[in-house]
Each structure stands twice: as C-alpha cells, then as structure tokens.
Length: 494
Image (cartoon, rainbow, N blue to C red; front, side):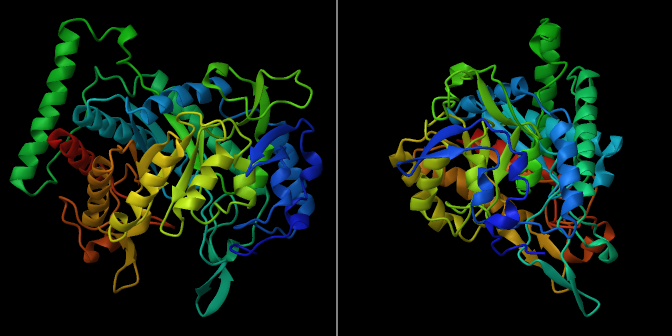
C-alpha cells in the first residue's frame, strides 16, 4: 500500500475507461486543458490506495456508478447560496463531526446526539455573532483518513496502517484494503443521511421543544453563571417569538438545514459518484469556466453527489496533483486545508485553479496552523487573498495543529490550545480588516474523554476512562458546547 508516495498514472487510471465522455474546458495557469471526472488519473497522486484485486475494484466501482446520488444539485445549490452569505459576512459557518466515522456510527442515538449538539452550538453562535448559522456536519461519508505513514508497528511487526472503514478494518488482522468497503461506505452514508433527513423532518430541531442545557459540569461558578445568562437569553428570545406568533411554520423554527461533508480523499469513489446533472442555480455563475464541448448542454454541471461539501486535505493539495485536478471540475462548494507548509503564492495559485471565475463562497479556506504558529502565518495568507481579489470564506480549524501526545503515548489535544488558536484567528482577522467566517471542529455528541481541559477539568489521567477514537481526539459534547459559549463571548465583546 502506498499512502504517501506518488502513484503512477497507469496505476491510478484503471477506471479511466469508465469515465463519461462529456468534457469541460477550464483555464489553469493560462493554459486551456480538458477536464473529465477521470482526468485526475493522468496526474501524480498522494494517499492513493493500492488494491490486490483489481477485478473486485472494478466491480465495486461499477456498482457505485449505477447507484443513485446521495445528495441532489438542489441541495448543493441551497448550500452555495448560504455560503455566499458567509463569504460576504452575512452568516457564520459551523462545521463539525467525527475525525473519521466508523460504519458502527451509523446508529440512531449517535446520529441524533450529533444533530442536537450542532443545533445547540449554532443557537449559541447566533446569539453571539448576531448572524444566521450555516450548519455542515462531518457525517455521512467522512470515513477515509490520510496517514503520514502507510504502515505502523504492532506487537513488533510492521502492518498496514488503518486508513478508515471504507478502506480497511481497524483490527490488525483486517488491514488489507478491501474494495467491497467502498460499496459499504456508500450505503452507510446514504443510510446516515436518510436518518438525518428523517430526524429533521420529524422535529428533532423544533425550537418549540425544550433543549437540554445541563451545565452541572462547569466547576467555576463565575463561568457557569455567564453560560446560564446566555441560555436564559436564548430561552427568553424563543419564548418571546412564540408569544408574538413569530414561531409559525413559516418562521423556520420547526426545522433547520444540515448539510454533509467529507474530505475528498479516495478519488475512485468520488469519480464514481460524479454526475452531470441539470443545475438549478445558474445565477450563481457556476458554469462560465467550464463550457461544454458542443455548447448544447450548458444548463448542466458536474456534481459530486456523495456529499454537499468536500475539502482537499493538507497532504493532497499539490498544484499539479490528482486531487486538485479532480476538484477543479466539480460544481460543489469546496474547502482547502491551509497549513504551515502552504506558501501565500501557492495559495493564490490554488484559488486560480479551483475557482477561475471567482465565484463568491465557492472556496472555504480551512486554516490549521496550531496555536504556536497562527500569529506568524495567517496574516500573510489573508493579505495575499485580499490582493488577489478572491472572496473566500475564512474558517478556523483549531484542532489539527494542536495535537500532542501524553507521556503515556496517548494522542490528545488541550482545550486551552484549541481556544487559543480560535482567539488568535478572530483577533488577526480583525486587525487585517478581514473576518473569520466559521469554525471547523472534530467533535462528538458522546461523553468521550479524548481532549483534556475545559470546564470539566479533564486531565491526562482521565483520558483512559472513555477514549474511543481510532484516529484523532475529539471534543466531547460538553467541551464543544463550551467552545461555542466562548466564541459567542468573543463576538459579544467586539
């Protein structure tokens, strides 16, 4: 298995023959090049998965090709409209969920707990920022994880690393990449999203229903009183709206929009779910950069129908790489992870390749520097984008740059570092006459003990109590809600 190395075009191009024949034109670096859902196969690729049984891979991909879309262009375009508002400072973006989903997470209680947590966090952020909140879940497809090494030590023996449930199993005896897991990933994603839609349609987000704001874990009485005042204000606002009749069905208090997202890592899977479909949002100027070959299909676009929103990871954003090539052709809104190794010049090149028409809200820049690095790196990136004329969404991911390991070898993150990076991001954007448009968090609705700190006062010794993540540590429900309270406080103090 080659996790970090570059795969040859011949290895990556095994499904090129299955690609649809319609082509699009896109201008990159001043040159016109043809894009198809399989044109990425002619580019060097990172994090590629090598399977032993290519016949089984072809069978799995053929099944995916025949399967219906998981999401629709109408939903994607609704998200694009909302993200345009975020880019213009009219709304705030909350994105969160598991580091890497497991198939076992496709279970009603786990799904409901994440929906409820994201809803509560969004209410707190609405209170703080005085803006609508766009909610995107890292759910219904966030299975694969990039790894720094394709192998790891286990009982003195080198074995393939766990790459996510859609590739191999966490059990050391189940580490061989299995193409049937691609099909399983599709059905688990579809089932998860189906239940999300059912929950939203059945009133799980109905703000007439009481919400559990239990704050008994907050040990500092001053902080607890502050949070209680925020909860009282939110509750009183909802009560007032009900009193004056502003809580009718037309007000939108019975349900909310919740979109899905994942890292677009496995391009064979993503290609199989990329469809040319009629676009319901031509006014968003999504098509001029990709006119069709014969000009007779201009009301259609290439949509990735596996999720509403996809992002390119920090390890796969090479300018001439396969992932950037694939992402430049899809009409979905997309994210780019921006870390310490990305120069301002390469950032602008990425924006030019991925969004040549400068569609507002098309690109979300997900910064992930670490608390110690953000002050020295973020200002230059902001200035470069401002000078380029691109209008992007700036989103802070305070999780990935703040991962550390305890003396016992347990991977964790400190709540204070997460909050610290967020605070720096808010301050720097303000100083640079920019604004932070959103946050991107790894969290769960479960009572896990994976990140230390917060009002619960979790320490390194507490991590073993309920550490469940197979990849990176997540905020538990209390820590995540507390972070929302603190971010709301930042905005209230402005």
